[in-house]
Image 1 (spheres, helix red, strand yellow):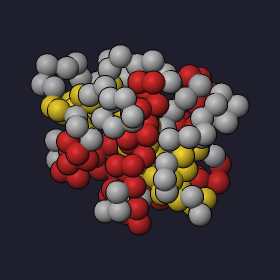
Image 2 (spheres, helix red, strand yellow; image 1 turned 135 degrees about the vertical axis):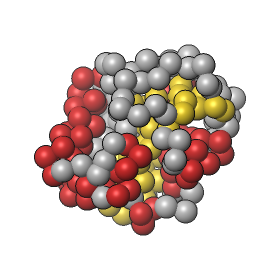
Image 3 (cartoon, one colour; image 1 turned 180 degrees about the horizontal axis):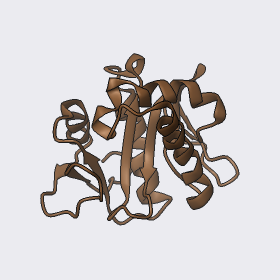
Image 4 (cartoon, helix red, strand yellow; image 1 turned 120 degrees about the horizontal axis):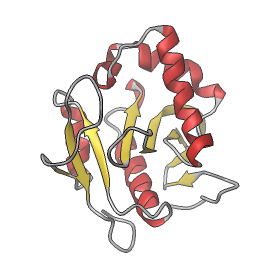
Length: 179
């Protein structure tokens, strides 16, 4: 993982660029938030709610100085999804979240990006712990959390959302970058 500095909030993995989301990502993210793929995060949303949801992703960076990255391939700046630290004011714990567009699924992109994001959260942001809040019906997201080494924490506090979720706790990465 290379590339991050306060003036350049970008991470690089062997095949991915994780960069601050930008206006050029709006159309793809609005389509995602309005689709059935958003069912596990409270959607599908109306156009207005989808727009506000994506705007909050960008605003998270301005308020906290970090947030979920737009994930792209190194050879193409088209957004494939968003992965990274997410901690709204009413979240009980710091979260590593992920949203992946259909064309990025099943290629290990979310796994690679989430590994980089977890390492960054612990090593650069100084987090002591990190969780992922996952809808109980989201088998793909549960599988990703478990592949990342996260374990179900039934005693963890729940975020204030309409439907209870599962809380997966991520282990602190070991030296060398692996979780």
